[in-house]
Amino acid sequence: MIRQIAIVGTGYVGLTTGACLASLGHNVVCADVDVEKVEQLRRAEVDILEPGLPELVAEGVAVGRLTFVVGAKRVFRASRPPIEAIFLCVPTPTGPDGAADLTAIESVIGEIREVLPQGCIVVNKSTVPVGTAARMERLLARKDISVVANPEFLSEGTAVRNFLYPERIVVGASNQHAAEGIAALYAKLGAPIVLTDTHSAELGKYAANCFLAMKLSYVNAIAELCERVGANVTDVTGSMGLDSRIGPAFLQPGPGWGGPCLPKDARALLQLASGMDLEFSLLEATITTNERQFARIVEKVRLAHGGTLAGARVGFLGLTFKAGTGDLRSSPALTVAQRLAAGGAVVQAYDPQVPVEKPGVTTGVRITSSPEAAAKNASVLVLLTEWPEFRKLDWPAIARQLDGKLVIDTRNHLDPEELAQAGLTWQGVGFGQATAC
Ligand code: UGA
Image 1 (cartoon, rainbow, N blue to C red):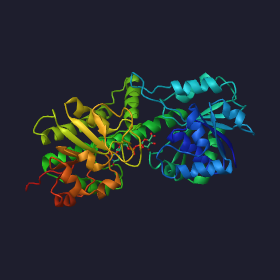
Image 2 (cartoon, rainbow, N blue to C red; image 1 turned 30 degrees about the vertical axis):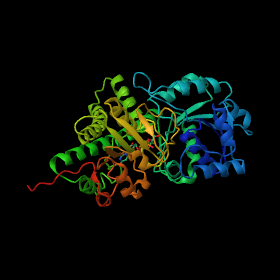
Image 3 (cartoon, helix red, strand yellow; image 1 turned 90 degrees about the horizontal axis):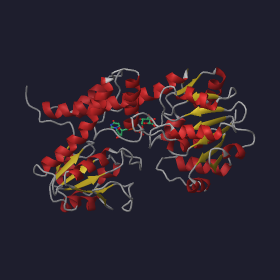
């Protein structure tokens, strides 16, 4: 059945949700506070890198199923017949105490409270502390309005695919009718639907993201151990991943996990546990192990530059928190760059998604326009983001620019043989010198 839906917030979650729901045949009105962004979206111009999204937005706009307005309240004026469900997809950044800051959600609730049509369902997609849906119901203070917790499981760079081919859909509500109404929106997708209470839906989202973070910290610690005992991390994780209880995904060691979600959610879950007097040492160790990865890279650079960072010129390949996105939020590359700069090094970086004129990336980092420019006169080159094009670089040309010979590959992304042919030394993560036992 075609439904009338509103979305508040047109970030990668809101816009993907809106465009995908429109592609399923629903009528969707999206609201944002950013006037310029709304104008762009009306012209079907998408300014985030998200494969498939521009096409879906263009299609939705062209057929009139996807429209955009400024301000949450306006969605109700823009829709005839009335909106049946309004999805909140607004940011929930880390507050000063580590817990999620719900200011944006509360402000939208305040704005729409009195204009919500009779029986409209308020759906929260943002990642929020347990108890937020119940709190939203209290703030709304309307007996005819139910709040549903419907967390998103979209990864940047694959968000459209994740939405249209989901592994699960989680719908938490205290009102069975509202839960079934929201579950029905996704009926065409044929995914398993977990109908539950709001607390379980909210906690389930944190539990999943923090499990992924834990898996990555574990793998990064195993990589560190591989270096010490003389083992090969690719073989170790390869054998682990063949165990179906473990699975091969999220076993790739790297410079530490980052991005707008995992670091924020790990801190928020830790805060939630401590507020409940639960010592969650496993999660604490997950976070401190991640911090250690940044320090490990800095140390490798320091050693490569004769034991000091002072005066070191360091080339970076990649700045975004992972490949396939233009997002720099909580990027491990930026953390490492800041620490190198604090130690007296100069960082010159190239990233295919970060333009030279990008303002305020971080102090101490100069953005360059090519991998060769990032390598120019550098004593060491460090790969931080696994952009596919970095596999096809002109290594002899890069070697001519570099002062030193070392390439530190924090993602095990490059071909050591190819680098060797260009006279460069490849140093990956998790490869020790094997010694006979
Ligand atoms: C994450 C989750 O994967 C999504 O399921 C979730 O919906 C989303 O957060 C969210 O809460 O909105 P995302 O932030 O896009 O998605 O990033 P991930 O793909 O999870 O990557 C996180 C970090 O782990 C990146 O820095 C990435 O480079 C790193 N990573 C990932 C590795 O180092 N190794 C791997 O094998 C996988």
